Length: 288
Image (cartoon, rainbow, N blue to C red):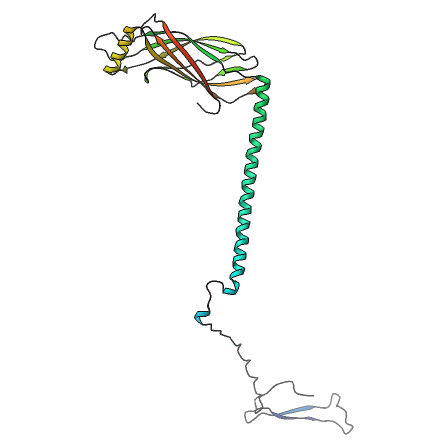
């Protein structure tokens, strides 16, 4: 049987096996001894197997001019194909987003338009009418000598007419009424809060007061001259937040703007309206 151990060629030991046996040639059973005799030089020690060789590392050096920071020419076409594919994908995603957004907006607009058409056809809403019936003035005697500061008090009777047969009107808080002369504010007041039912006409007494209004000399003289002529032009502007109710439907709060141009014969008690005209605007989507 060959020796499985590996030794250097110059240090391989010489050895022989001596079996003690009888002449029959059989291996001894129990009584025989097997002796091994190794000749390994003068020290008598067994030689050691050499250490395995360390793993080899491969170092590859590439010249500087062959290190590519951009794709080599043979890959430039592939780079263009991949870049164009990514750009098409981005454009497709953007197109899908805007398509979805546009379809959503169009759907909302269509639904609102259908609801508005049904509402107008069934309820036939009409804009309410407002008329200035009379206006009196107190504490505004511009004829008083050496007086440029006033606290005028205006009292107006306004007629509100709701011509709708299926719609009632709720006048809300936070209204604003002003009386002015050539864009100079003279007094402020508020519209009363109340509910006006269908097909109803209501007369309201609106009180508008000013405090410590100082006029310039030129403005004072202009008002005085108009009063002497029997025609003092004033502006009455009202901003009233309202809600309307039609059956079980109640709207959000929106603005009714009333602007009246009125001409009085004098700025004193017992004044008479010489001329008047009122216009109404509804701002359905503007908050007050």
